[in-house]
Every structure is written in structure tokens, then in C-alpha cells.
Image (cartoon, rainbow, N blue to C red):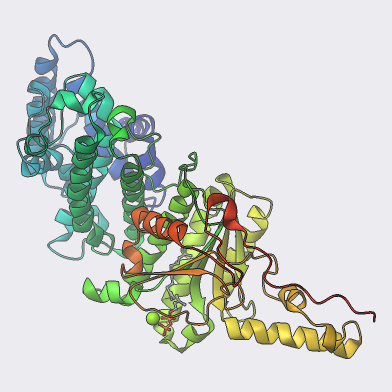
Length: 539
Ligand SMILES: CC(C)=CCC/C(C)=C/CC/C(C)=C/CC/C(C)=C/COP(=O)(O)OP(=O)(O)O
Ligand SMILES: [Mg+2]
């Protein structure tokens, strides 16, 4: 439908090429959008990327004039409705065809011109926000009407998401920008900490530099909170795309929280703004071998945001992808998550359907990437009741990833500890009846053979989010000697710092296993044997 003349078609294609080459992460994420809106995105971003290049690249002599000419031509063509340049023709067509607001383009051009004319100088974080809005947020605001916005606030929320994405770029480019004399950071934060922009690249004391980065993270967190409602403020077909942008930005955020002042010299490696997880070296330090998580609080989080429970589950799924990234980053080898219990069938059917759909969508969408990252995914739970689309997504990811060993992710779906133990007892009784096992000989290892995932190791650290302090029928066999951490954070807000803090708490605990002192340590992931197995008796 876009491009009813060969010239126009070529223009849309040129814009897509510009986006694919210059903004590859965004281009990948647009794959999650319905095909019919993608060309409009390419038209807007292709033009915006070219504008940015005219402002930043080429000989500095005459740059201001080239940018002014580009601006004047764009505005004239928007008025006449006739684009004359391959990277403007599709933009003009998109703005007219979809009735977008040309005043936003004019405002964007003014912001780019101002940024290009003089080095950035932001006194406060509010100044920095104005800059972000002009350069990036406004572009999101421009195309927000294409996403079937659900309210007057949605364009602002989409714009905030774009601003939050731009923060990731600022951190990524930080060392290069500083070396080029460009400081995109609030001067008052520097002043408060007794720092100058030059100090940010020096070898001075770490403490104020860490404090400076922590402040920027706090600003970024505020921005992420403003951007989060964008994921439900648009029509259903567009939500996955926004979730993916938000997840990508959250992964950047997590990376900076790990690096702290090291980001000033190293930047953030490899962009992840399309929401894909990226393979990185595990962070050094002690860690538990097997972490199990009760992901509680999606509904309360949704309530707190005034939206239906399903949006909490979508945000919860995003938090699970973030957890997987955090586990990889901290070098955890086994991660088990409680996604649906045998008791959760008692929830309203509307909610169970929303949970299954969410799980199926995220697993399907994440399968290839999890495989590339070396994650082995297993399903632990009853296999006879869940929806077929979820069951086949789980079966597919299991078979595709079975040989991987960087991280073993066990998804507990339709899982209940009592059902599992009862099933194991039935299997042992059948063996006894068949005469292959004497009842008197049954020991823990015999029962363990019949668990859903017999090779699942003992849990070292159990985390439950959202404040409740109970086990809710989760892995009773494997939790026998687990250390427990209860975190008040609702699941959708659980980030890398929460996991890191839980891991730190774990490493300070003294584990005894009923046999005297045994402090958790990196090498101590595997506890001593539970109890001596009874000697095999002659059959
Ligand atoms: C695995 C991926 C990609 C996403 C998971 C994210 C989702 C959708 C999680 C499902 C949300 C959910 C239903 C979590 C329940 C976890 C659970 C079984 C917690 C135990 O608590 P309750 O079932 O509330 O039991 P209590 O009644 O004892 O509180
Ligand atoms: Mg609950």
C-alpha cells in the first residue's frame, strides 16, 4: 500500500536501508510490528537518521548551512506535499497519508540544529530531559498515532520510552563523547559531588564517580517508570514491540548498574535496545549454583498501575527475560522459575488464559535467542493439562536447547510439589508391585528418580518476590536446605540489583546442612550429601 509509484517505493526502501544500517537494534525490533505499519516507521526514522548524520557528519565547514537547507527543504515539502529527496519523499507521504503532526518535525529540526550549533551544556536533569525530548522523544511522539493510542497520555508515554532508549545511547557513547568534549550529563550533579566533566574520564577516586553514575541511574529509573505505561497505552498488535524496546533499555540499565563508574571509561558494550539478551562474560564473584524464584506480584503491580491483571503478567514476562539476563551476567548455572502452579487453576479462566498466552508468546519469541545464548530450557510440571499452544512452545524450546549448558532454565508450569511427590510415590508403588524394588529398600534416591526432572539439583537460594513469606507448594524436595530470601519488590519491577543483593545475602549465610559449619562460597555450590543412602539390600 505504501509506494504507489516506483519513486515512492524506492524512497520507502531507502529509508528502511538507512534504519537497518544505522539503527540495527530498532530495525530488528520493528519485526515485531504488524507489517503494514513498518514502512511508516522506516520513513520517519530513515529521515531522522539522515537528519542526524547531516548534523554530525561530513566536513565541519558548511555543516550548519547543509543542515539549514535540509530543514528548509523538509518543511517546504511537508507544506506542498511533494518530497523531492529519496529520504524525504517517504516521510512527506507518511505524514500526509497518516495525518501526523508536522509541528513535531519542525520542533525536532530545531532541537537538532541547536545541538549541532554548540556543545551540550545541561545545568539540571530537567535540561537534559528537554534535550532528550527534542532529539528522540519527539520522534516517538510523532509516530505514536500509528499505534492506535488508547488515551491522551499515550504519545507522552511513548515519547518517554524513546527518551529512555536514548539514555542507553548516552551511556554507550559516554567515553567517546567525553573525549570529544561533549558532556551530556547534568552539571549540578557534577558540582554536588565536587567533580568537573574532565574528572569523568580521569583516574580519580572511585567513590564520587560511582556516586555520579548512581545519580544518573536514579534519573534513568524515573524515566523508565514514566515509559512503562506505554506498553499498554497502545493497541494490542503494537505492544510486543514496545515491550521489546523497554526490555532492551532495562538490560542496558542493568549493565550500567553493574559497571558503575567503569561505564565512564568502557561504555556499555554491544547495544541491546531491541530487547535481545546478549552473551557477556559472567561478573566475577561468589554465587549460588541453583537459584529458584517464586515470581509473585504481577496482579498487585497491575492493580497499583490501575490496569487489568494481564498487563501485570506481560510485564512479569519481561521481568523473567531480564532475570535470565541477570542470571547469565552473574554466572548462575541453574535457574528455576515458578510460572504456574497446580493451585493457579483456581483463578478465573480469563486470567489463566492470559497467563498461558503470555507464556506461549514469550517462549515462542525468545526460543531462538535463548538457544544462541546457550540456555537449556526444561519444563517441570504436569504435561497433560496446559493449552496445546503453550505445551508445543515448551516442547519445542526443550528439544531445541537440550544440548546447551551455559544456564539451565527450568520453567515450572502446572507444577505442584504435592502432585509431584504423589506421582513419584505412585511410581515407586508400581515398582514394588512389579517386584523390581522392595518397599523396605526405598530411599531418597529412589524417590528422586521419579521426580518430574530427576536431574534438577538441590536449590541453594530461593527468592520470593512481593512480600509474601511462604513456599506455596514449590519444589519441596529440592528446597530441603535452601537459603530463603523474601523481597518486597513486585515481580515486574525485579531487576539485576535485586538478584545481586539476594546473591550477596546468600554468600554471607552459614550453611550447615545439619552437620556443623559450612559457609556458602563459590566452590560450595554443591552441598555435602544429604544423608547416607541405606546400603543396598540383596533382592
Ligand atoms: C516464563 C516467562 C517468560 C514468564 C513468566 C511470567 C509470568 C506470566 C508469570 C506468571 C505469573 C504467575 C501466575 C505467577 C505465579 C507464581 C506462583 C505459582 C506463585 C505462588 O504464589 P500464589 O500462586 O499466588 O500462591 P499463594 O496463594 O500461596 O500466594
Ligand atoms: Mg499470591
